[in-house]
Length: 480
Image 1 (cartoon, rainbow, N blue to C red):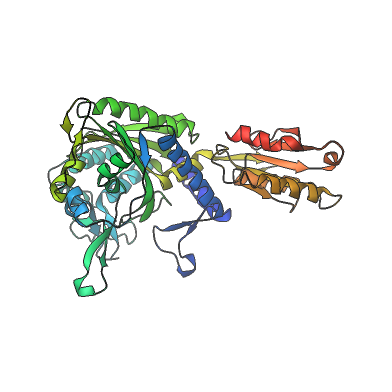
Image 2: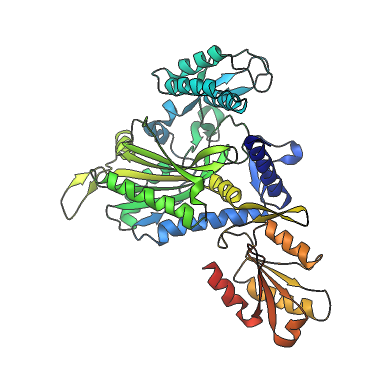
């Protein structure tokens, strides 16, 4: 089996596990689903909330100079004029005239390059990739991408036809009307990012939270992009959640702050999410956005390729200066100690919550062969696990269920735990392993005599005896 086939099968297994165990479902599935939209199930919402909590605590509780907000999804339309989204927030799109299916031109070329690599045509793939990079950096990227598609005679992945429209830019923002009367209603947008809600509240947060430069504003929230999406599960969705922090600094100090946040954010993925360091790589942007003076992405080695999960960008004073220009409001900061006035520079850390979720699942997914059959174990960090412990009575008689239920009710006030008395102990262990539960406690006949229970460790299968009265303290220590 080739590496590509192995990766595709691994992704299929992860998607199957997500549906089977209640992590992620296709949205509106009973109606055939809605493309690039997904629902988080009972276990999925727990894992996602745990990831968000880990991020929120790392930002707002471990830094005295970072405050949080929750800005509205819809904002005044001039916000998006100031940010540049109305004019330039677009992707290069191309339509297959035969099937009427629309594709992102850059994704189409990337897929063609991967097909060449899969066929062993490495030299040809390298040549096309070099031309692709040159096209992306050209003054007229749209025209250059179209010419490359035509030159290579790249066919439609769905219809197999070579019958393309020209490449054109397609704005990704969703618009709607605000107002009771349609003719008089104003156009507003569903936000395509959460950052602008932070920038427009710069002074409001600074004053109310009594912040001094340097300081940050953090936010977790939904964003919406009308993207043309092909596969890769929840990696790229129309409706997604961002975890963003904008860090305001004095001009001239931004690159030191940038390096600090680069190190901080990489360490967070390794230490807090438990991601294997060898699966994370840095990507430096050679061609910077017009407002940036430095930009790096943290990328993860997914089964479908190495892709971005977080961006760390030095945005200069572009955002605050633009909002000052468009709103007429003074966005300058007055330093009471040095008597200086300036528009702060910004270091941005922007991480996709859904992408982090998928990364955590991919990194934790493990298969072991037991009795000739594959046994799935999600080796999640205990702090992130949707369920922290399983509580099992060995049998449904002899007073064991009563003791198990009492332990369950005592623990559930403090931890997300699950009671299970169905099937053999082995099957119950397997069910909990598949969902990442780090510890299982079994009440057996010895419990009646000495008030001890068996605790089983998910990752090793090792077991030990523990006094009933110590179970809560045990979980508190292991989950701290």
